[in-house]
Image 1 (cartoon, rainbow, N blue to C red):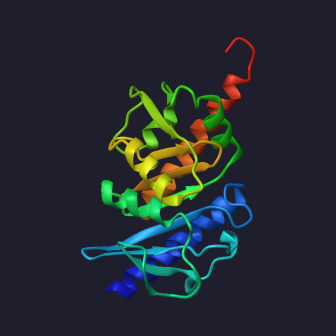
Image 2: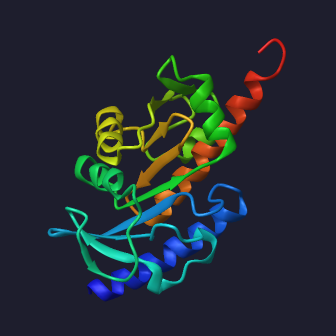
Amino acid sequence: MIESRRGSASTSMIDAAQFFHQRGWLLGTCGNLSVQISQDPRQVLVTPSGKDKGRLVPSDFLLVNDQGQPLGGGGKASEELSVHLEIYRRTSAQAVYHVHSVPNNLASHLWREQGFVEFQGMEMIKGIAGKTLHDVIALPIVANHQDMQELAHSVGSALRQDIPAVLVHQHGIYAWGTSPEAARRHVEIFEFLCDYKVQLHGRPGQ
């Protein structure tokens, strides 16, 4: 059963990573993706550190436990694994995807002092699990840290159960969902919303 879930998870992450790479959200070796394949005990399949995410193959992924210790696979797990694990502990997430883009970096800079980016009245909001066109979405923004444990604590403290994402200042976005497909969708939705918000902000009179 675990091997079957592992194969399905790696396929989902490879497909998502290639799509994100094509969109310019996973350039170079940046970003990281993970899928929880077992909750009790927690086992997470995660992308490796220092690997081009647009060229992943199944053997690249590492299986780790709740403490981030390797259970299988080669290479080194993403340095931001601790952030993923914190999200799994605090939410019902089954997949966590982290990407870097120009729009999400700009949004994190423009609204850093406010502490969140607000979206309302846009049809795309309905792509967020449980949300309707009439909901107001406040995407949290947290400070960036080079200490991954500190970053994990910041993300964990800022996350909201009804908003499946956190934006890290001039770094990137962590988005998650109850399946790999939901996590991928949430990345796409929040990227659209950030891009729209940044472009609207730059227009005279807005």
